[in-house]
Image (cartoon, rainbow, N blue to C red; front, side):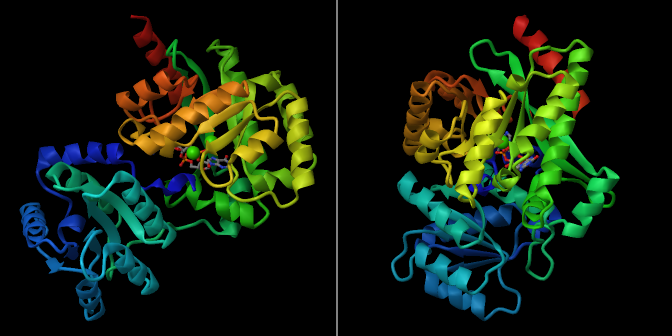
Length: 428
Ligand code: C2E
Ligand code: CA
Ligand code: CA
């Protein structure tokens, strides 16, 4: 769930700015086959002109879902990108998307709409549930900057034969050898206290240093490790590294009180000796367990509830902090708050980024904060990308924030340099 919110518009705007300077879209984008679907002749004309001006020549048009499906079916080279209206007489966008998914459409989808935000949100979720490649929703009238930003994620994925390269997962064998060869690495993203604007801790995020493919994101290996019995070893390796750096930073005199957050998977919660293993590691490093928070995402229900509850309760007894990660999504629900001794509530970025302009998201953010405060939990907002997001979560009463607005995750040595720089900037 956490990664399913589509590309971050603001990150794309950075790349769009690069475009702005060069006024030239990358070749992979200019050579795309695009299909525009809209019942409004004027919109079709307007968007087609805009695409042509951007150097995208191959643009087809359809006035409703039926016509679009026909265009897709009868083509040996199907469109690689759809820009699709929602409300159309005849077959509307929603029905069209379902047919697309049933036909295994492999191109990317941009929605365009003048509809109410909540309707659009629902359709976005639907597109993702259909496992279509969703890029963005553009508000009508479509603006060039927004269109360019929506297209940018395609710059990295070379379409071959109409298909975009899917995420290439590591194989269980690669993970097995990589763990032994030391390919697992960790990055750190700061947690910043909202009021004092001080760096109070970091979240440790797993990375893979692949000998050929370079630095890989956790989406390429966490789920595989979970499915193939490798997640316990991986989690302990990440934990050990995180605590190792915490000790090192303390020895170097950087912020002795820095807190550390480590992600644990639901699959880790059937290993009964996990609390002892973590406890041994922190003791050996001379780190107080209270400085370490375990972030638990409920991406699925607990397999063995009694076992999971036992492990969680013992982790808490040993003094570790427990965070309910991605709060508001998946199974990270109210019921779990009641059942488990969480010390921190981490609000998912779906209710943070852009929430200032999204009434429903903001309502969920604000009530999550109140809920957390009532339960005496620390409240962290993730996905703070802009000043607007920051101001909103500050006003809502979050204690700490994490997100691109401060900085992206980075290697350990960069993290301490960044922290010093950030703090010297705040003091001035
Ligand atoms: P998460 O726990 O929700 O971690 C935050 C993710 O959001 C990180 O992605 C981070 O780079 C990204 N992020 C940070 N700030 C922003 C922002 O302002 N906007 C946006 N759009 N994204 C932001 P990353 O590092 O790719 O990790 C993805 C997920 O992989 C994590 O989501 C976590 O669920 C999982 N993961 C990472 N490391 C581990 C690990 O050691 N063990 C386990 N079990 N899971 C891990
Ligand atoms: Ca996390
Ligand atoms: Ca998250």
